[in-house]
Length: 358
Image (cartoon, rainbow, N blue to C red; front, top):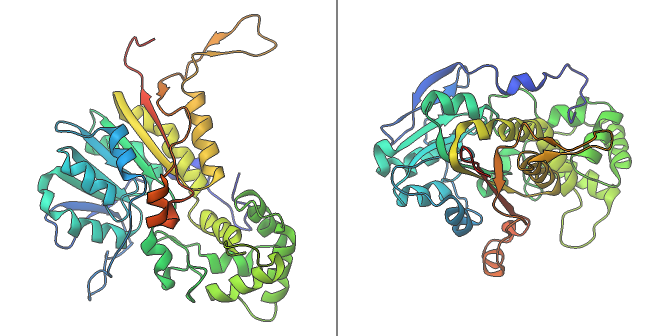
């Protein structure tokens, strides 16, 4: 749906299919975690780079998940482990997933003091159900999805996410994946580029931007983030404080990492992993993600379905959730002042209905 490409794109089955993993150990942590076979080591011989990330809506996440002893919480987007530390400090057991081996290595070192209360795996959160059931067949009490890019990834020029630092056009959250942003902008046709800029970036000048990219790459391929950002800015124009290439970079990143497909798979599988009464909390950073989460929660929480052609409403066979946050929770002004990247965050929470709950 979101991946027009000159090469065949796997169906949604790719998200849940291959669970084969190789056992590795996080440096500084006596707890094994899994990494997809063939992806190599999680750090260089010089050790992991300094990793920084400020957790968004931390107090709100802890309030709604309410972690405590005897509970098991899955942080399916571990990142800098900011939410994970707060969960562990309250006595819960933590299962942490992240597709970025660099983030996972950092998290392992940071969480080493919690010993056997922590289990880490290198996983795409699209594989939430299969990986979660393998580790805890009885289910979990909470699931956290904090979507988007970490501050560390944004500030690491060589990862290709930054609009303000020159670096390779990569944008892969998992370096073991094949597709890079450079391949997209240098090889995809104009119509496909325009489509992802429109659908995933919501860029109003999607066709003009795609045309400019295709014309420019004939004489000089794009390999640097600043080079591409300048090309896009020349078409979109500079207005306000938001960089004019932000939406295009968002679309490229989401395509490279199949973010909407991964989110859809995670949402669909999360209720099956939750115990009755367990909660799932999802933090989104743009409207596409938030709409998907909102619609999913609604589709799984309404008790009856009604259509004009039906003589009467019918029970919803997929009703299994109760929406806890009728409106999205957003950061308070002090948090945004201290961490401007939190300004677009929205938190939605739902709870799995207990057996017989009305």
